[in-house]
Length: 165
Image 1: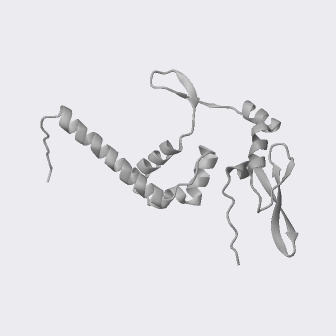
Image 2: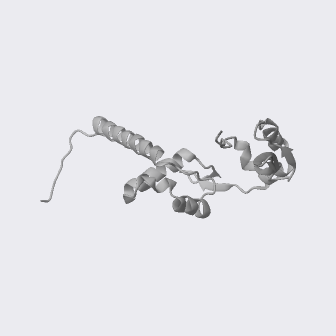
Image 3: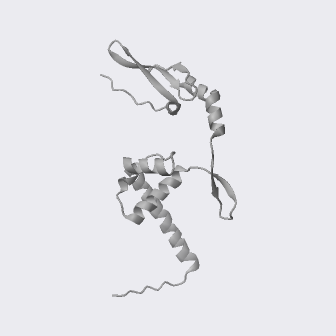
């Protein structure tokens, strides 16, 4: 028996899958655009090219994108600019949070944490696996260590250590 494959195409963010019973099997037969409610054929055995082309020209989606409010942030000199979500920055900040609070590495993939971040801070946040977090921690440590070594080799002639025992 064949196992069902996951729908990996990014077009499914903008569509609702429609299913029907054919010969005792549940089969995907169509997709409804979440913006304009048009229904397109989308059998499991077919492609998604026509769905992605529709999203590019969907009038309702264009209106929604045009009317969406952007977020502002301030630069270091005090001027304003639009804020853009950066997944890499989110991952780096997650690593810093885990290191500072000494919480489990799996924090980034816990449903409670993801729900909190999406509802309270940023709806664009994506879940980060513990394997990815482990790699990010090692990379962050290596980068910080390199900065520290660079600081010691270029500007500091001696280091004094004191201890209260």
